[in-house]
Image (cartoon, rainbow, N blue to C red; front, side, top):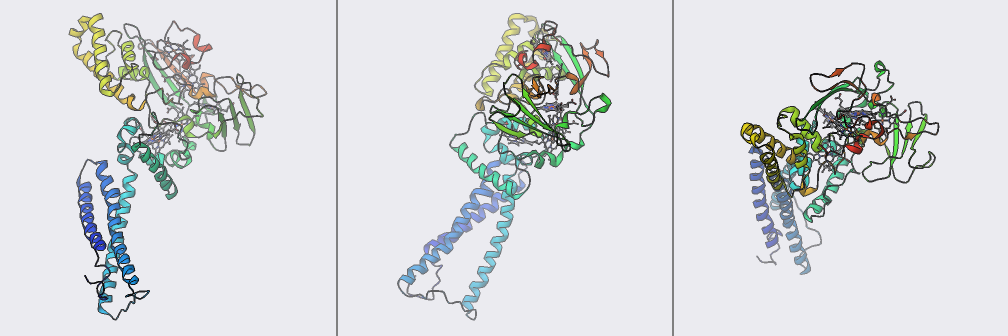
Length: 500
Ligand code: HEC
Ligand code: HEC
Ligand code: HEC
Ligand code: HEC
Ligand code: HEC
Ligand code: HEC
């Protein structure tokens, strides 16, 4: 190419030519990946990353090389004085006409493809596969628990991002930092909660649920097994008052009354996990304020303690709507109720909980040692079981291993202990963070801890001889040794989740 030849195109230079060739190559690659992703039933997250994020990035870079080469070429020619300051465009010149049409066609096609590409990239970065599987180890606990939750069909982003461009951009900005922390292995194990940047519940949960909708009560059936040789069973049926207006039960308000209509509850926490709440303010629909202070904290109502002040929303109770890591005692009770673990195996409740709380390095290590420990126990203490109930024992062992894999993630230090569930009060303080009978106004009114304000036990006892009363029964503790101790102590002080 002769640089002195003024008629030769600026685009005839090595940089622009390389740009053109590379663009074509990357374009073909994208087209192939796109088709692969389209026709593959099982979505592969890495394919998506390549097709919608990485290769398009290279394509844009190569496309930029084309004008960059031309500019450099022009600049060099100008330095040598052959070129006017601005290009002279003359639409009567057929060559210029040809160039104008080609540029127009190329830009149009490019914009069209970019629009499709950007749309695909948007969908892809909002997909569960992207959120849950790219950083496999980091998100494994949440992804696994999510698939077992009531929200298994709700996308991650519907709770974590919500709709609208602002939150999309915000999530990608924090996402960029998260990608860095994964690559640099700088992420905390376990991931810290509460997530402070979580979008307000009004804009996520309330898109599908809304507090005004709650009324009446929901029935819950619990079956428990004691840690004795015969795994003595105990059942509790209760009505949980989820509603707002509960006048039929003689109760003014139900559980969701904290936020119904103009009711508001504010509180201050003094710890990171929002488990200690010494100061609570209720603002009624009429604007009347009441301040409840933990009488053990030595605080007064005028001066809230230093700490985070929050207006109560869905997440203050439902902090685990999608990622529940079950405590061993609860998970084993449930498996025994559903038949995964046969209650006729002696001491199985006690032993299953015992092996689940052991320390293991990985899921494989856990599976191996759980099997060994249970087999050893029955071999030593009940050798006849190995023969007479071989298949039942095998099924029980497999179920315990499955419980382990679904609720314990040693690589991320995740288990029920890392993420206390604020619904309830038996295994972690939950409702009793405020409803412990110690939070008082100056006039001496307390946030009630009476069992009957939240639920009515309508039947309880050993299966077959349960007592029942639809008006509600006084709670009876299943373990006779505990007697009336539950009246003096909070349930969660004894029930840490790892006692059988
Ligand atoms: C129904 C709503 C909902 C859905 C769906 C959901 N999450 Fe969450 N997620 C939450 C809430 C609420 C928290 C807890 C926030 C807190 O404690 O501050 C949370 C917490 C997390 C955390 C922090 C660690 C932890 O276990 O608490 C991660 C990571 C996470 N979610 C990832 C995901 C991924 C990945 C998906 C999709 C596979 C998903 N989430 C789907 C509501 C949801
Ligand atoms: C995209 C819609 C959607 C969003 C957003 C959503 N949910 Fe749900 N949620 C559902 C559906 C659907 C069900 C019913 C599942 C069923 O019937 O098993 C449900 C069920 C529930 C239940 C009952 C759970 C159970 O075990 O029966 C609770 C509690 C709940 N959601 C709380 C929340 C909270 C808290 C949030 C916000 C963090 C939220 N949901 C966000 C759709 C949603
Ligand atoms: C004071 C604590 C608290 C707050 C705040 C709260 N909930 Fe609940 N919610 C409960 C309890 C307790 C239950 C019943 C037990 C359960 O389902 O686990 C419940 C039940 C539900 C259910 C299932 C109801 C049914 O009929 O099966 C949904 C859905 C739900 N809540 C959504 C929400 C949403 C959305 C918000 C925010 C607007 C919210 N909750 C705020 C404590 C709360
Ligand atoms: C941040 C503190 C706080 C937490 C946590 C909390 N509550 Fe409340 N709750 C209050 C306050 C304050 C009131 C209003 C008390 C009053 O007016 O006497 C209230 C009132 C109630 C009422 C109405 C009581 C009545 O007398 O009719 C119910 C039911 C209730 N809460 C259930 C729950 C449940 C269930 C949970 C746990 C899932 C829970 N609360 C967690 C602060 C809290
Ligand atoms: C502030 C409201 C509130 C008060 C007060 C309260 N509970 Fe509960 N209780 C709950 C909620 C919410 C749950 C959890 C329901 C769930 O798991 O979805 C629960 C669960 C239970 C369960 C079933 C536990 C399980 O998960 O197996 C029992 C039993 C129980 N409560 C007994 C009592 C007794 C006895 C008292 C009185 C000393 C009491 N509760 C006081 C709100 C309350
Ligand atoms: C003084 C300690 C203590 C207190 C307080 C206590 N429990 Fe228990 N609970 C026990 C012991 C010990 C057992 C026997 C079985 C075991 O080791 O889990 C038990 C067993 C149970 C069981 C059956 C076994 C199982 O798998 O859960 C239930 C249900 C139960 N308790 C509910 C409650 C409730 C609800 C409260 C609060 C109202 C409470 N407990 C308070 C010590 C206590």
